[in-house]
Length: 319
Ligand SMILES: Nc1nc2c(ncn2[C@@H]2O[C@H](COP(=O)(O)OP(=O)(O)OP(=O)(O)O)[C@@H](O)[C@H]2O)c(=O)[nH]1
Ligand SMILES: [Mg+2]
Image 1 (cartoon, helix red, strand yellow):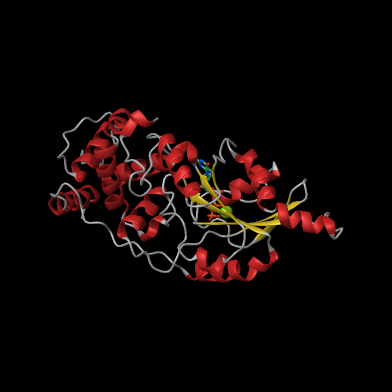
Image 2 (tube, protein in one colour):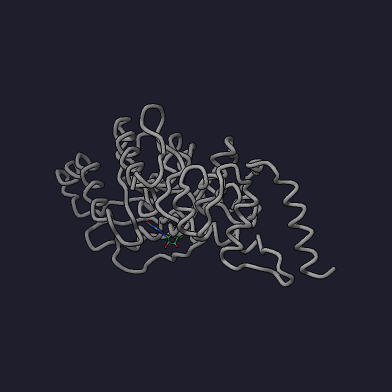
């Protein structure tokens, strides 16, 4: 079968399958053996550290938090850092920070790509540990470094945070989940030691929306998801919540009831992504949509809002 013909048939099949405005949510699960190992590693390493920085994605401030962490950490001091704030809706991030603080959580936001917000992290760590540091000073042990473990989902920016704090490239960073494979200590100049950890998810995503949003942000390995289906779901969300941004980025202006498959085709067409024979290359269009969303190029887009009474996403006006 010719390649173009195969694609045309696949596209036709997809078109009939996705005649609904919104395709079914994919069932996404990703908990490979190395994550089960990381889970154990985190628990075993806890006695070695004074505090844990939990990195979450500012675009998904609840869904990107590991539900198992509460159980593991017990009373261990903890800071929640909403990273990639440059890619999130600023007003939404403020609301999330207010929400978490109202719940007694020490929460900060940062952008480890530019470094914005990172300078506040270590002072807050010291403040959290002030009693322990005072006790150490009394015992004459003030020279002992503060030890901090960095945990979070894959690709959220743990190693980037460490490199920012260490002011140099100490930990490997790449734009895909699963880059850090082992734990690694990094010593800072100012008497602190950071423990970089591999990213970890949890054994079963109970909520398909959460799983899907995690995949939108790039926390789930792309080979376990159907790229076109995922991109169609994201386009559907953007088309309803952030239509101006979609229009601006991809130069598409389509009615609200446009099917997600037609949105994907419109993106491919606008970008001139064609297969031999003139068929739209929906696979390439899907990769472009996901890559550009993940890199924050479509705009500052938050995927969930704090519970009840804390506001709802209302698009570009928030920026
Ligand atoms: N836009 C944006 N990108 C970021 C930010 N922090 C990190 N990144 C990017 O996110 C990608 C993943 O960063 P890493 O630091 O490798 O993430 P990680 O959490 O260590 O990932 P694993 O080791 O795979 O679990 C890289 O492409 C970083 O450049 C941020 O604040 N904003
Ligand atoms: Mg890493």
